[in-house]
Amino acid sequence: MRSLRTLLPLLLLASSVLPAAEVGWKTALAQPDGWYATAAARTLADSVLLYQTPVGGWPKNTDFSDPPTEEFLEDARMDHRAATIDNNATTTPLRFLARVLAAAPDDRTRTAFERGFDYLLAAQYENGGWPQYFPLQKGYYTHITYNDNAMVNVLEFLRQAARGEPPYTFVDEARRNRATAAVAKGIDCILRTQVRNAEGHLTAWCAQHDETTLAPAWARNFEPPTLSGGESVGIVRFLIGIETPSPEVRAAIEGAVNWFSKVKITGLRYETFKDADGKKDRRVVPDPSAPSIWARFYELGTDRPLFMGRDKVVHYALADIERERRVGYGYYTTSPSSLLESQYPKWQKRLEKAAAPVTKATGTKKPAKSKP
Image 1 (cartoon, rainbow, N blue to C red):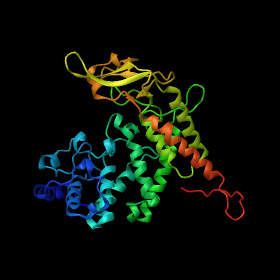
Image 2 (image 1 turned 90 degrees about the vertical axis):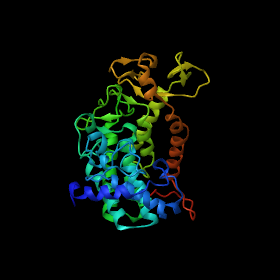
Image 3 (image 1 turned 45 degrees about the vertical axis):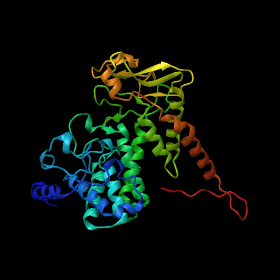
Image 4 (image 1 turned 135 degrees about the vertical axis):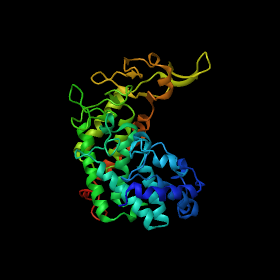
């Protein structure tokens, strides 16, 4: 493979002549199937390829519809050019390239897709987890990262590719097999990191877990080791998508759902308002008719909603942390609601139906077939 120093002049030339894409990056995965065979899709794909890093992944917080500048390509700062799975990086470019390949195959795009695919496989820890950055960066970035659904996004992508679901029908058998193995390891990691309470009951997950001990771990100053009322939802939804769940997976789902039911908050409304100075702020106010909400952080051992600002001091009320964090971070969520009210009941019914299918000829029960 050519070195970045060798490729850089070519990348800079390409980025200087490539026009901005007609479809923005935010809507790049929301187009009709036919669009991905158009010249506009090709323009966007060319721009995405320019942003791919030498290790095969993509940086985060980047508008890939706007071709990179010379300054961007020459800047190798960790938070600027490093490959990561944070904030939908790498998985979203791969999903886009897959749709382009399914509509209009070409060798250059396929090579880029396969490099990105292989990057995700290489980034996985032996214990089944994924760090936020790979190659590894010092600090909390090395932790197994459930935060913002980073690891779940990778697992969902690999599972769809392993199953050969559209648009991943072009993925070769060897990579599909490797993806199947990676997903199995990821599921094992999820089961091993699920936190048990003092009574031994399964609960939920922290937004990040230590990559060695698997214990809940710190991230930023306002992201302490706690049980997550947000990220845990994405994990359970992924587990629900397993076609033939093991008893251990079923127990994990049941334990998490029971925990969500236990810690839901009723009678409070989470709202945005303007303070006396006309500045945006957030608060919770009493409201008996408000739908259930959940805290982003629940204290380990007590399940008490916990709030922490940049000073790293524990508080038990949203009003006690600084306004900048109240406005700039989501300390409450409603995401468990749809899980409890819709997805979990549907999962239960699916399992009940699969447990004892009836043959048309005799009306007798037959065992359900196992599926990966």
